[in-house]
Length: 352
Image (cartoon, rainbow, N blue to C red; front, side, top):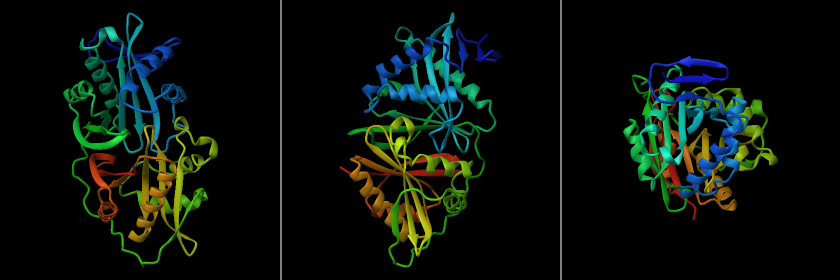
């Protein structure tokens, strides 16, 4: 019988396997977790150093993500055989009911024995017991054929290919699996006017959290579930100078104004490997969108970023059309990524 061990509590589950499953690392297992990740990931990703596994372990121990905005918490699952760890996988819980899976690593002597398949299957079954979880997803290096085929065998489907996402010249494949279908897809488009033609003033820096929340939250409801005042506060905290490292998920905020009134917001998040994410992008008109996107590209270029990508609800089709005119390319359609029934698009642009 396989068991899930949570601290002192042990929960029996229906699946039979030759290992136990826990979501808490024991003393001495952290070093193995770090060694396995650092032996595997740098083959496919740039800027992976000890801060990466250590930040995963810190967040998992804490039980919540102090540094994330869409991320709520992380769990590190451990498979043990005869009380000896044989594999690890990370589950990152997102606002809106999605969970990002991986990385997953097993000890070398048990690879290609089927233990990885059973381990991941057991972890995903445990995660899916939570009725709030709608979707599992992950990203895989396009050059990692073995892991790609492994996850396709688990029932994942390709949702897009991100160009040079974590390493120049190496694409990243996005895979997803719907756990609880929403039923009917959301319909309709967000009506975003063209604007007056007068260019807004775009500033980088902090904004009063209440003022920012008043602008952002109402405009996010159509495309994002689970966002509240804490989401906005997490962005403001991430603007601090001491947060501007990967492990602490530092961010930049671009705010557009007309006559002192907020008319648009864009949040920029640097990623390991040289990309930068612009999300959310919230605007009152397309002129504001154009101004923020161009300011974001300049800022990204100043920071030495290779690539910028934007994540948008599919309902923001007029902003998508603007991005295409600005030289972005559509790279992925993520099924129900942040809200039931609402797909999300990813558009990327090379800054090289």
